[in-house]
Figure 1 (cartoon, rainbow, N blue to C red):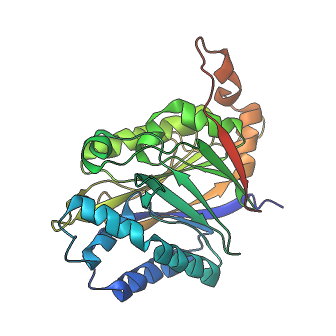
Figure 2: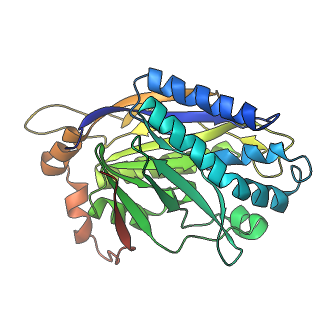
Length: 307
């Protein structure tokens, strides 16, 4: 049975220079405990939040390629910690994305979703920004979009730049996605606004929720995530239901954080309102998508059962 009304927490997560693994574990534990205490059923961490772990190895901390390899090597331990915290607090967690080494030696940027009963799923970023292509050497994932079928609805993950490409979100929406999770890492407000505008546009087009969360703060020691700007936000379609009379906020913003401040941002999501707007909203963007001239075939989608 799907729980239709629940609270989400979006992290404005600071990149810290960590003294050791215990400092990281203590930090993550505090953040998850705070989200759970705030009533969150799902907590979302940003893109490349895991790159702060590169500070654990002074030998590679200042080297971009060394940092990428070092963080990737720690992923099994990182994921075990997230799984433990998810189970301990009874909360779903989208872990901060991280470079993941493939069998051929290349790296992808992967977000991982953990359930309180111990299951896990993943989503690779599909669209690479210039800095990922030209400086980091990160490649796009090849398995398309995953839609996670969960007791809190159907969730999809669009990592940062992915949110700026409508067909990715549309493929997820066609597969039933009701909530789009958009972890991001942007060094300028230009980048933040691109992802925010993309998130709000995807919520409008798909008549769904979009949960955007960024890294924040400066980390001069890091060659990868040295500057981080943005604000977490939870968005819905700016619309009202014709017959029932309920309405989303006029600007579609359910909650927004204070720019670049470390914090959780919370909002209550009601999947019944999404279903009602898709059936009888003031506009029917989701239904009418296919009528637009030049609508393209959609990317491959895999349904991942986490019920």
